[in-house]
Figure (cartoon, rainbow, N blue to C red):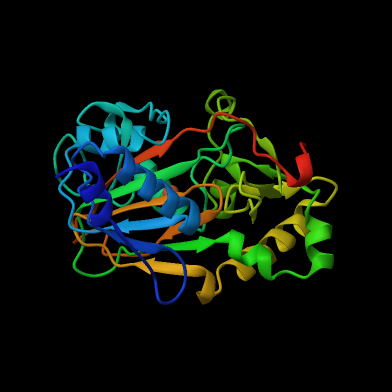
Length: 301
Ligand SMILES: [Fe+2]
């Protein structure tokens, strides 16, 4: 099939309710021709969350597709990596070494499960926040284990001018420890914490296309100039606004589904499933950030 014919096959159908769009006519296992890649990129800019169904992707093919969008983040722990690829994270309750379901009281598994059950933005505690994440479903439970997504761009747009002006030059602190604190998990050892110190970001970020978004989620630990308690209430309010049904999408996974989402403007959370009796395995790739988040009208904390 020639390039033009391939591009013509691409169909982008916005979800009837909530956010994001379904993309069909694209085989992500093959190198994307320029026109197809441009069509997918344009859809991603417009919708910030794209669903591709019925894919069959090897780890290498997922990496190849993801790398079209930038340099991928590394996941340092070998036991979390898919087939030894440091840029592919196993999101799962299955132990890689044994193939068995992990014990629910395994500390690492417990903290991961609790952490991902809150609305969050992957790696928002990094100084250079990651741009996008791709999740590819391999094994899914018959019931539960959905993922919810919430678009803070749309939420920001609904705020009053007064409220937007109030938020536009605030500085939010993101700290990995905050998510552990929220779930009453013990702090990590000082030498581990030192590797991911808290990061300062604009609370409202402005994208290249002028769209503005709230940069919040469970790692958001404070607002500069506010007490911890007041900041928590403030951030929780913004989260409640952002996660109203009209700004969200709930994905019920089937094996072969791939979702890519904007990891700055879109929060996500994993929904519960039977951790003991059901197997769930997704592969995540994440496009690393290469610059601090831009604030409104050039604001830089
Ligand atoms: Fe996540």
